[in-house]
Structure formats: structure tokens, C-alpha cells
Length: 219
Image (cartoon, rainbow, N blue to C red; front, side, top):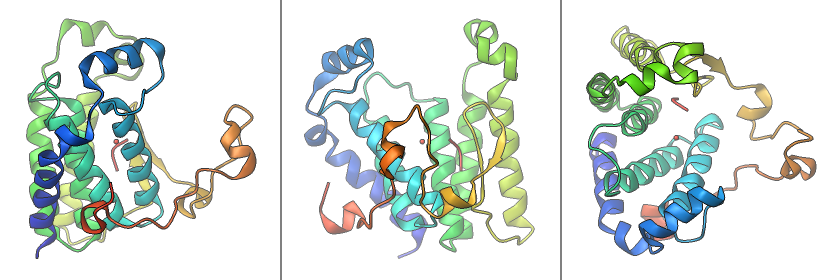
């Protein structure tokens, strides 16, 4: 099965089971936001876990696992009643799926998902609120930076260049490189992150949920 077909199938499969997976309800999500802590069973808690696993898998070259987690994440976004049909989050996840497909050798699928992400980014409304936000004032129009980043990815594919798994675009639209330690699955020590004191956080050897029946930075 082509990877792009598998990507669509993964998203649809996770959408079908989203109502069973998310049992906390919208009110519980609101409480989580107020508390700053994700309560079990909420969409937010599941998304945070998937984002962490997807990024860890991607930077350590576990691209099939990363594809699964990004597809799972996208399914939760698409089944969220509070999420608009057009959003930067959806576009970013779509782009990330394209990156995984490129690494897995499916260039046609990568192009399809990158082009879909471009359409999504360009459709995100540019509001007065976004113009007045601190991030926009300091870093500029992030949507334009996302579009430019994806267009460069598409140009690279069409030029026949191999995918580069060492770079990513951060939350402020800057292109960065993973450190050698990060790509090896190691967490840098930080006095502000207690889990790093004991080496916690390294990617475990996990299977792909959709296949084993166990139950988003731009990359």
C-alpha cells in the first residue's frame, strides 16, 4: 500500500475511534486550560502526548512512528467541535505528515500533503488580533514564514534532493537544526526540567498504534 494511502487510512481510522478515546468532554478541556494542567481523558492531554512522541520519533529517524502519531494528532484536531475547518495547527500537522512521507520514500504523497498544507496556511485568516499580538510584532507574519518553509520543501522534492531530517521550523518561524544529542534520542540537561536530571524522556521502542491495536513544530 502506498504510504500516502496509508496516511489517509490512519487519519480516518483514528477519527472513527476519537469519540471513544476522548471521554473527558469539552468542559474538562476548559478546566484543563484554566488549571494549566491536562486532565486525563481530555483531548488536550492526548494531543500533548502525541505531539511529544511524534517529534521525538521524527528527530530520531523513526519516521513510521512519527507518521502514525502526526496522523493520530490530525484526526483529533479534525474531530474537535471547537476547531475551525481552517487552522494553522491543521496545516502544520498536514505539512509534518508530508515530511514523514518524503522520508519514507513516497515523494508523490509528500507533494500532495505539502500542497494541501500550503492551501491550508494560505486560507488561515489574518486578523487584527494577530497583527496586534506580541509574537507578530516581534517575529513578523508567521503564516508567511510557514508558507515559505513548505514551498522550499516542495522545491527540494521536485529538484530530486533527499529529505533532510536534521532541520525543523520552530514555533516562531525560525529554521533550526536538531542537535546531535537530540537526534540520538538524548535529552539535554536543564535545571528547569527535572525529568532531564535522570535521563528521562528518551523515545522508547514503541510500535505503531494503528497496527498494534494499542492506543506538533513543523518538521
